[in-house]
Amino acid sequence: MSLSSFFSSFVGVVHADAPEEKSEPEAKEEPQEEEAKEEEEEEEPEDIHPVLREEAQESAKCKPLTHHFLQCQERVQSGQGFKHEDCVEEIMMHCTDNEVAPKLFAKLR
Image (cartoon, rainbow, N blue to C red; front, side, top):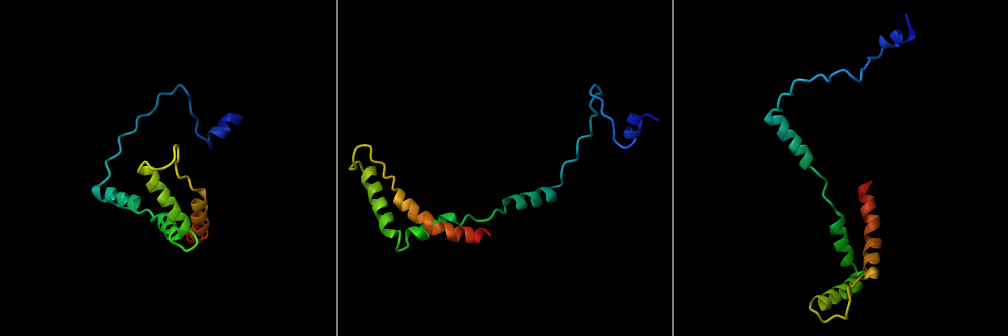
């Protein structure tokens, strides 16, 4: 008994030139199984980030910055802003992100 035939008895041998075996087409899933899969796919957890961000924007700490940002947006959108003004208010974003992060990560645990 050769070493290769010994291992062949435990492990199947695959030949590269061998034609692929065609398997029979699988039967279509029954409607009940399809519905169960759709229900599983539809059940995604609710994203709480927008809710927490809105609460942070209304907090006493961030509200003045949010108000300033919204006024700037209104001014620019109405055409009364400075040339090339885009209202990128990083201070407001940092404020809301710093308020949201601990709450968000506490709920993700």
